[in-house]
Image (cartoon, rainbow, N blue to C red; front, side, top):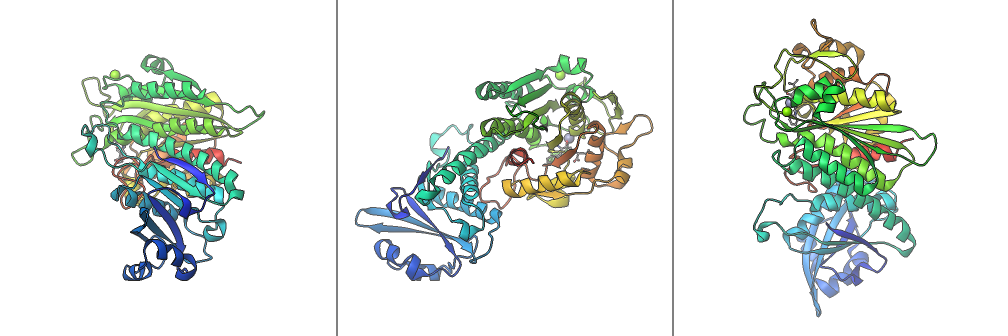
Length: 502
Ligand code: BES
Ligand code: MG
Ligand code: ZN
């Protein structure tokens, strides 16, 4: 992991491989760079002009400078026009580019001068936090199974955030929080990147247990026998064909503050989604180890929350099963009974996420009577067609909760987009021979809404929002701080949702 530190020494006094300068558009070369150029790279201005570097948002330019003592890399990053509030997502991508440039040049230590509030329009603690989280995300790679040490890739090891002495406290705070969020998100990514022959439901339970112990969280795990005994027919059905037992993981963070609200975080944990007897075809099945991203997100978010210690109570519920085929598999046409007593026809065994979430949501709302509940799930392929990979779909009938999630999306980086969820659409999950049907009426299309309408039958009176993370969870293109593989979608969102609860 990158070590991030604060320093109030000038950038040019930092003993690191590269100095990173943020520049606003139409910066004054004479005022800001002339003396630096004189020492390290005399023709910098010509070089910048040649590469058309103007400081436009997103631009980057790296040069190898040198003085009598040796080589000094210089990175210049464009922040765009003066006096505008910068789009934080642009800034994240800039930080991602910075890490990628360092990697490609094999520079293992960097120092950057944090852009101040006047420049970014955002307070310095937030910018420090975002810088650190994003640098950690950018540096993450999944190379556990590369056996040749030299082929594992080059890692940046050190990032120094340079700011004024008076801002030391808030920058240090930003670094600390940024690291906690980045680590939690990267742990979600790691679990999702690990293949389904490693990450099984019992393995997730084992990892959750170890983290709970390390961080002093309460944890309860229901194994398959208990799941059956509790009447959780959804989780039971989905896991029938798997050789691995299904698991319901419940973790609790308790604040010392009296009369604090309780928030429930629920995650879909299908460690492999073959589709079941409605088997997924080639082209759709290969990445289905990612289908536990929601469960990993709920677990890792509550771990981060226990480190950040907000004045709210939090429970995380991860519904884990493997959706497989065998002689024991649940069949299309089966009717199952859930924890809250409702029944559903299994119209399609590949709509299994809502079956496991139904029990998890019903359990969380009944046992903990939370103030609000949020679930994250890689629920539908359709959400990618609707909104593409840069957003998570938000579905709720509660406008205040929708606004809260949307805000969390903006500040955390797990951006969201709201999709329709109204009473009239609930007809699409009704059925003639059971209370509900898990694949709804296809003539309605609107896959993400269909999923949310199904889930709405399991939340009781609890204010609830469903977040479909299927579009943003894996192989997100053109985003400098990700690579191919898992993004950990939803983890940052849940942490922010809790930390900024009012
Ligand atoms: N795990 C999938 C959704 C998914 C697709 C996640 C692509 C990530 C990438 C989910 O269980 C599923 O198969 N959903 C079906 C629902 C349908 C049968 C109602 C889908 O989207 O086709
Ligand atoms: Mg089994
Ligand atoms: Zn499925």
